[in-house]
Image 1 (cartoon, rainbow, N blue to C red):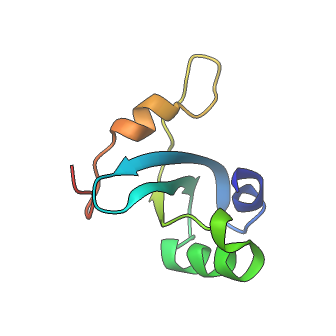
Image 2 (cartoon, helix red, strand yellow):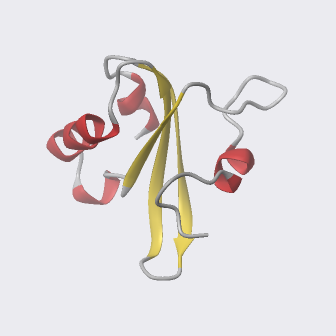
Length: 88
């Protein structure tokens, strides 16, 4: 999923995580760093090109992904983020 998203126009970096959702069980969230890429358009491309189990339930576009000291996306920091629509 991350490799696919990185290959899309306007996406500079991507990270995906599985998160627990009390109402829906486990689901995949994708975080992308980039400009000019809307989450709905990215989701539609995922639906067209990926299998149903690979499609994230939500894509969150950020100006910049949090990074570890080594420059990789910081998954712990992403999991702790809050954004509109997130329940907890």
